[in-house]
Amino acid sequence: MATNTKPCANCKLRARYDKNPKSLIGRFWRWHIGFCPGWKGYLASLDEEERKAVCEKYNLKK
Image 1 (cartoon, helix red, strand yellow):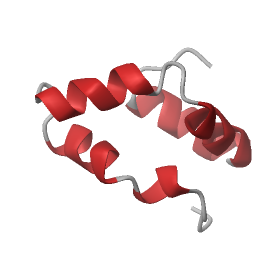
Image 2 (spheres, helix red, strand yellow):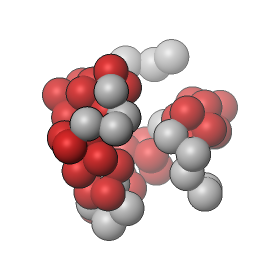
Image 3 (cartoon, rainbow, N blue to C red):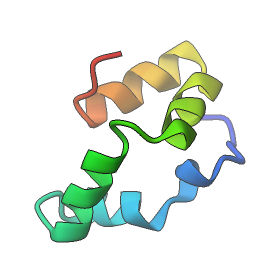
Image 4 (cartoon, rainbow, N blue to C red):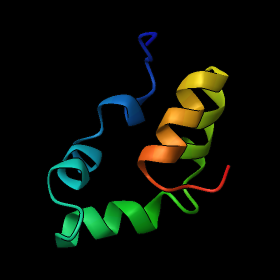
């Protein structure tokens, strides 16, 4: 994976989701990425293979 300088690559809320998706903070992060322009920019900055892996990991429709 390429190093990404976008904050979403190292987001603490994302890490909390990864640790416990059913936690309040984890659920908030998952809801938030549905409309967050930063997350959309982060996904757009990834190459096709990385984007597909992230979408599969988080069950996104992209």
